[in-house]
Image (cartoon, rainbow, N blue to C red; front, side, top):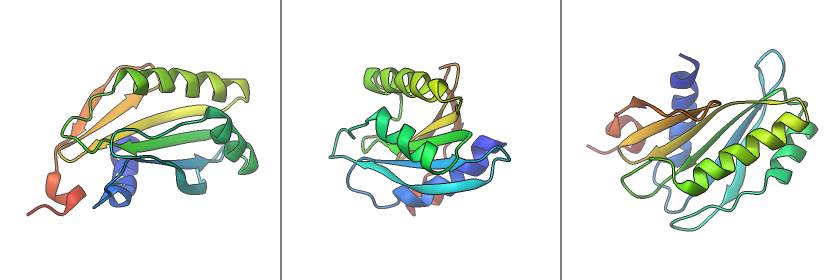
Length: 135
């Protein structure tokens, strides 16, 4: 249920986006949001990601948990090799400061994929009109 709710929060951020963007929510120990915003902005087919910047923001906002989301502009939101690699790097980096990565959400025009901490993938939604205002 947490994944679905946070998915709705992120969905509006990507509506009409013409480039890949990475958003982050930082949550405290009570899972209250202490920061939300753009982490990185990329181009049409990739977004740069620097774990050090995520760790800095997390520490600055007293984070205990992190939720990350980014969009894929193509039809597939299946995680790329780069997505899988960065997920591992994020987990490792956050682990060093005692912070948990709750989920990573990947958005595409027709799907959302949740990347749980263990790295298995679960499709949770196919609601094009809600996320992208497509009639």
